[in-house]
Image 1 (cartoon, rainbow, N blue to C red):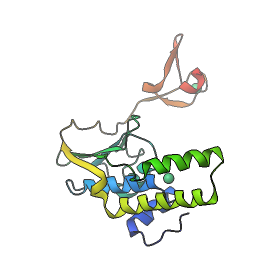
Image 2 (image 1 turned 90 degrees about the vertical axis):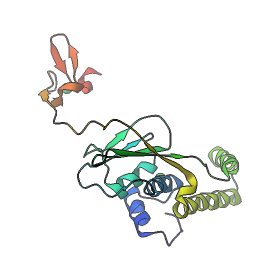
Image 3 (image 1 turned 120 degrees about the vertical axis):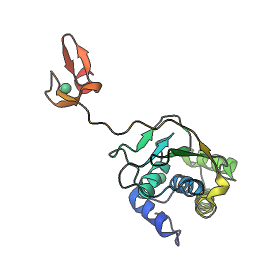
Image 4 (image 1 turned 30 degrees about the vertical axis):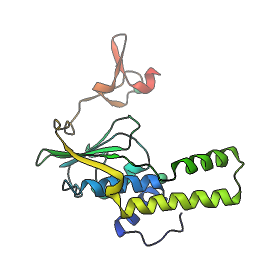
Length: 197
Ligand SMILES: [Zn+2]
Ligand SMILES: [Zn+2]
């Protein structure tokens, strides 16, 4: 756990959910805060607010904590595109806002060099201290100045598919109930992906 203190209460909640303080978590926090300048991104009890995330890194945990967008409710959509981009869609108004991280850590080069040395096991204590300092600095600036790091704009999009009640059937091999749309054909019967492996 970082030695940094005095975070806003809602960032503390993100940390409790995520387990540690890191710049990634602060990126997700900043994406939500920056987007709230254009859209009412309030915690979602049901699934009025949908968030489409283009990565599955630490940042997504902040979105889940702050907005209640979760896989379980079907209002968290994952696109494996490796980008720190977050689109928020309000089902009530049909409005959507897209936030993309535009400014990486100001000391990106230095961080990159330090990380290489740390991974290679050649980092000095001083290197490690410096690395922690830079990461803490980046985290703190994301939290205090979110709009500086994100380009936020309103976009038009089709409503995301709502969570669906799905048909299930037993797998012909293991007998476990499986979503029919996820089953694969084996001869004349349908089996689960676990058994198909
Ligand atoms: Zn993390
Ligand atoms: Zn099976």
